[in-house]
Length: 337
Image (cartoon, rainbow, N blue to C red):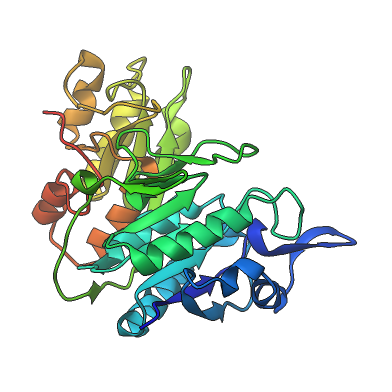
C-alpha cells in the first residue's frame, strides 16, 4: 500500500508569489503549484493531503495560538498518515519545531518542518529539494521526532536555530549532530534518534508571559526592573560564556530579587553559538545561583522558551518545573555536570 502524508502549509517564503508589492503569500497558489510538479508523480513519492491555513502567515507573526493549531491538526489526523510535513517560514521555524516537540509527547512517526530561502516560483529555488526530501523522509523513515529538514540535513527540532538569512543552509544544530543527511542517498544516524513507543499525548500551550533578556557590556539592569511583575512567569537570560553576567552595581541584584519574590522562573542559557551554561562555574554567576536561577545547560533559547511554556501549561508545581527544566525530556539538552 502506498504511503501517505499530510502537508500543513502555514505560510512563509516557500509559497510566496511575486506581486506588485513584492513577494507575498497567495491563497490557493501553493496547492496548485504542487499539483504541477512532475516529481510528485514519480512512484517513490508518497500520496499526500494538503491543509492550507487561512490567513497564511509570515512566520514573524506566529503566536502560541498558531503553535496550538498546528499541534491540534497533527493530533486530529495522527492515525491517518505515515508522517507530517509542515511548510513554515524560516524566521521562527526553530521556535515552532521546539514547541511541537514538547506539546507532542509519544510520537511514533515523523513531523518535519521545512521551507525555503527562495520562493518555489523562482528558478533557483531551494524549495523543491527541501520539500521533496521532507516528504520522502516523512513517509518512508522511522524517525519518531519533530525535526527540521533544510539544506540537506535533518536536525532535531528542539536543537535547531536559524544561522543565516541569505544562505541556503539556513539552520544548524550546534550542540547535537544531524539525525540524517541527504546526499546521493539519505543516511540516517540511528544512534542519535530518540524512541518513544507510546500513545500520543498532546498538550495545549497556555499563553503565559515569558521574556528573553540578552546580556551585553554596559547593560543597565534598572531598565528591566519594571517588567518584573507577578504576571511574568519566566525570563530566559542569554548570559556570557558559561553563564556569567556583569556585577557592576546593585541593579542586577534588585532585578533578580524581584523576580525571586514574584515566583518568576529564571533560566540561564549561553549566548555562545556552541557550548553550555553552568551556573556557579565562575564567580560572575554566583548571584544567579543565589537567586535560584535554573541552568539551561546547552539548550537553545528557542528550546528554553518553549519548554517553559510547556511545563507551565502542564500546571506542574515549582519543584517539578525546576527539576524538569534541568532534565532532558525530549532530547533538548545534555547535562554538562
